Image 1 (cartoon, rainbow, N blue to C red):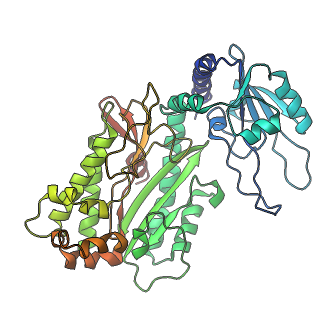
Image 2 (image 1 turned 120 degrees about the vertical axis):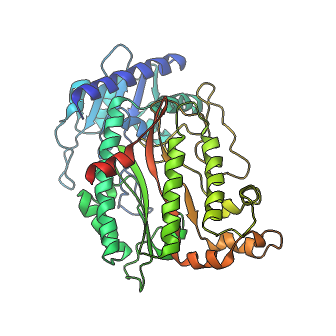
Image 3 (image 1 turned 90 degrees about the vertical axis):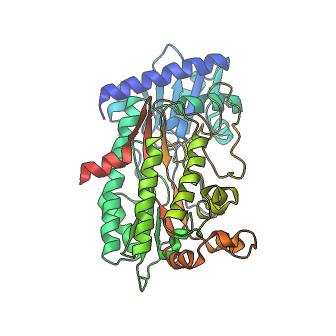
Length: 441
């Protein structure tokens, strides 16, 4: 990352806020990082997660109580909270490429922070939670329409943001490669995850989301949440959905690996080809819903190709009878950026009205037409989930659509998901994930 890219990014954010504040008839934006949260009836705090709209301004992820204050026509002010404390290590002195873009005002305690905010309270609007408004004594909090407009500005990434996201991809790919080696060596889920962290030199709390590290049948649990310390008798398959973040911007990558079974390996190879074909269709102006529905048609063809569907069945029938949904019950992807499931994916670019999801596809997180410099995920899957397959197995109308011997043979492997992060271009996409894997080979 270069200082010039960051300076241009802050200038772009200032211009966005100029319009947002004018539309809201507000004089000043106050954007708090947020506060620590504590366990119920305990003094143990949770891992701090900064307000993403604060991080849009500045890459300070571990700095509660800091606040950005912006009044159009002036340099943004950073209230840098640096409390004197011997129980915990205070924030270090302000340092980094961001310091030149802000008027930095160090606040040693709450009183100094309140005094700073009070200087700008006339006509101010707080971009955060009500609890932050109460703490900072700001009376007006941004409403739903303000946030919709703000979220729309975040859907298109600046060159600085794209640079951060490419760096996050490279970091995550290092971890993914280490995880793949650990699987091949026969490690447990827990040991694989530890290798993932070690390869990136990061703590678990620094990840953008909890990693999914799933061996065998666990890959059929879409958000599998545990790390089994027991090494399975037979490590047949491995799915890892794990990311990294750089300067608050996330990577979100999934890969699946086979330990040699011919049918599962054929499925994995076919899914990889299908995922790349979907990526080839991505470009500005296309409706993401059409990509999602096309992924189901591709999955139907894949089920026929691998003889998982019964002989003579059409791809259309597999889609219409919701057979493909049982194998692929989640959405094709989502926006990515300061948040893993980033904002603005379900609303129109102009009116911010909700855009309907395709009937029967309620899990889809992105329903709009794509635009240049948006970043999103493409993550088709094919899973063998007994909870979803059993109703088909016992349905007199639908059970004959599948080759149950082949399906049952793959249940012990859990399933396949392949997820890349792509940047939208006018005539295609930049595949940030594949580029990162290629660079490390």
